[in-house]
Image 1 (cartoon, rainbow, N blue to C red):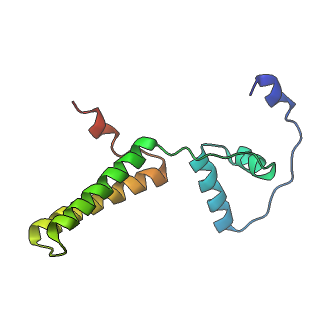
Image 2 (tube, rainbow, N blue to C red; image 1 turned 45 degrees about the vertical axis):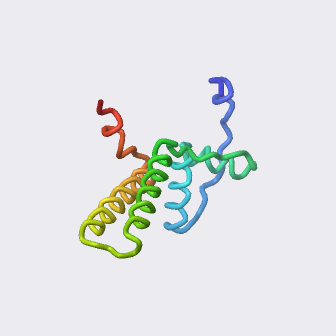
Length: 116
């Protein structure tokens, strides 16, 4: 959007009343889309496309961790020994870490990927 288009946006809409939970949900949705709340609401109201800005590297990491979890389970054939129990736990912690990173908009594995 050019500067002149931004300057033309002078009309204001009245405030919107909503529940605190609704406000948080709208803010989370706007954050996930990488938009300000105003831009997010404008796009919703005008039926414009809203695409979430999820890091594909994190999604790929979750897929890798899920595959590792499945492999460990198949290796153990349901018999969870102490060794497999520890590995299951480590994988679950890593998956949770990745999910929290996506939710917060952070990349918890950036430092690990940068290592030689």
